[in-house]
Length: 321
Figure (spheres, rainbow, N blue to C red):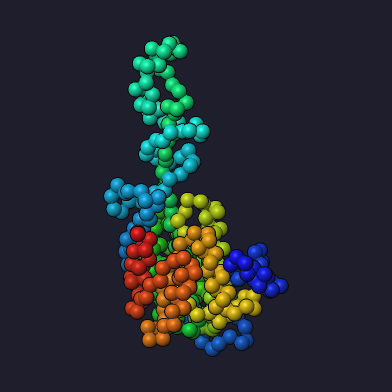
């Protein structure tokens, strides 16, 4: 969005950064002009036992499949796995590695007679600990709930995938959230959680219908993922966007597709991972989903047969790369 920020400040309701902020409230809004059928409830798709998520953090080798995801940490907590030269950071010293580094030089140092100490250390001998700690995955589903596609089937499959992930993430650090966008705004209907009970309450009645505020959904997703990473720098956030890539509601007054493309660039700039699930029928596909994925710096999948299991397996396949 660099170089075009001036156009994104036209709305008097724009928030920080010059972009109008979508409503993050989980409460459903209504107005007399909404499309008929917009209150159509959607049931939950079948749930099933999901495979564990193994994220390739720091390209580290796992001990065996099914182990929890680990990432390196600069905190003085976590499992000590190896050591490296301390250099100008003589903190969290690994004494065992330091002794091993100094041992080959003891005879030479005693011969020089610079000290009577039994063990003579130099600053160059110091080794600091490299630690890893368990980290969580934050999977944020962002779903087009408008009438632009088969919204009911899409929402049903998404709910099933969410519940399957939550059942697998019970008593662990993985979190799942859901944003839906329809009518004129996006809503955070399920804030990131690992609670099946909270998800059941939040997802019980999700209506579909109305227009397609794609840019609003993208911007709210960026806010949620960016905030989560600011709270925990070691969390692994990823957005799963189910859409055909077509938007027809603008937050700022500029063309809706152009606005969505600009907001999508925020994800790539912030190095936030994303997967686009293209929900357009192959016969009518204009390539909008792929173009959006390119702007996001993510990958685009086509799932002609969208079910909870196919959606979840696609997500896990991408995460485990």
